[in-house]
Length: 356
Image (cartoon, rainbow, N blue to C red; front, side, top):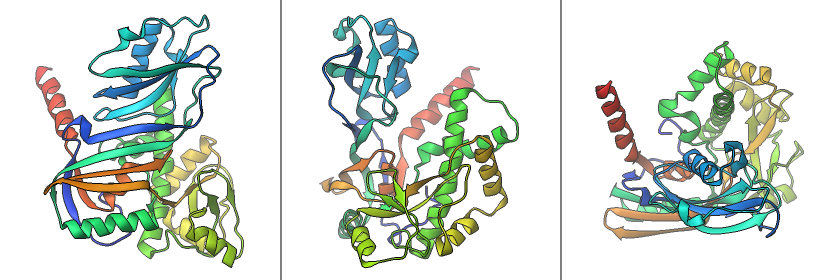
């Protein structure tokens, strides 16, 4: 994300994140209350140093069901301490011993029955608590930047998680579009990466022009907390008031089949941002895959934002984000934040290479 423009001026700090898993804590905010009946066991699980897919496989083995019988609302990082909900399909409503799941990597916090399988995206958002270590930067300037983000919001970037190690998912998507065969799960991931890269290009153009949170002629508006869009329509005092109170946001395309909904200056900017050779190839591949044209908000506003200095070089930041938004977008506006866990990944890869 260091290549993306900044909305609020020059970087203010350098720091490290994920020196230990506890430095990156995420708690899912559920989108619904369990019914207390049905044949799907909902489990609230806290995990440490394990990815979501590995936990799902362990639950399937524990329950004696196929892996497709276990579902989750969203994937969470491995190098973190996260709380998330899983569902396990148990038609006979007989759950194995929950104590058998307890380990250093996972603990079951709560369990209840529900009448439907947990669907992907079925969460209201995520609450984050991040600890930045070895911080170099002016404390007062950092506090002012955080206050600006809390008041004004920030660009709604797709985070680097979408693009894979060293951004490799976009080149891989281009290879797939050129005919390379991939597994079904990889195909979904690469389609998402291609869409996200095109969205970030449009958002980058608007950040550079300073209009990522203000309207252009021909704007398509997105309702806050929803995928619903409306417009274009002439700017009015009513729209200006709704924009100011974060009820609506400017939007950009998630590419797919169909005409862009935007017109005028907004359409011209989107066309220009997506006009180079790589963007054209990504657009064609997404259309061939028959994804539909959709939109995504250009702006997000963190809720419940707080910060505290644990010592002179250790900053704790907490906030909540809607589903589908990335904590790295917040860190990006502060400065250069290095992921310390990547050193562990590189070291483990080197050990494997040496053994081979």
